[in-house]
Length: 199
Ligand code: ATP
Image: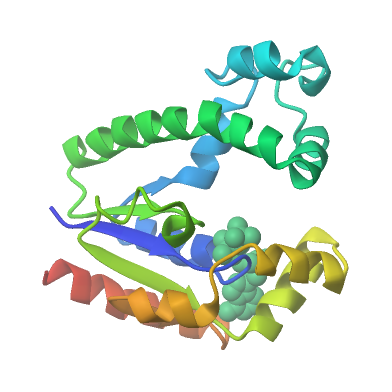
């Protein structure tokens, strides 16, 4: 069963692509979704986060206070490292669990959606093929400014912390160009699905 990694910069269209691959029957394991699951109320990351960072970072419902934590880790690399030391192993563990479930459910191939797949290093060894969702940087900026209500400077700062467009493209086995309409994207993804089924 092919194990596919799916990555791309912020706002490139990873979710749009993985949604369509999921509709076509692929088993989707989205590490962003998992990161939310493990930090939701009663999630396995809550207790260790509370222990390390204190109760201030847990909201009234018992979930991670994402805005507060984002502010902390943006300003403090040690805090970022400590948070990742808690969350990354839990994300991997849950990803493996979901992969088994998808495989047992009969998915013809698995797609691991990992925003920082190239930056974080550990995923690249596990996958058979890498799909990169690509669009011009300007398109990324305008999509994310609109979707997240951020300033251009804020989006540019995030982009600077990610691999460059060129680095990503250099490592891709398949590139999905997402610079046209959503209908065009769906058509590209349908073709990608056919290619993956032939691996
Ligand atoms: P992130 O890394 O921030 O999670 P992502 O790579 O998963 O982003 P999406 O959430 O799929 O990207 O897309 C970013 C935004 O751009 C969304 O609001 C989405 O609806 C929109 N979008 C994506 N592709 C297109 C397109 N081809 N045409 C119009 N809007 C698009």
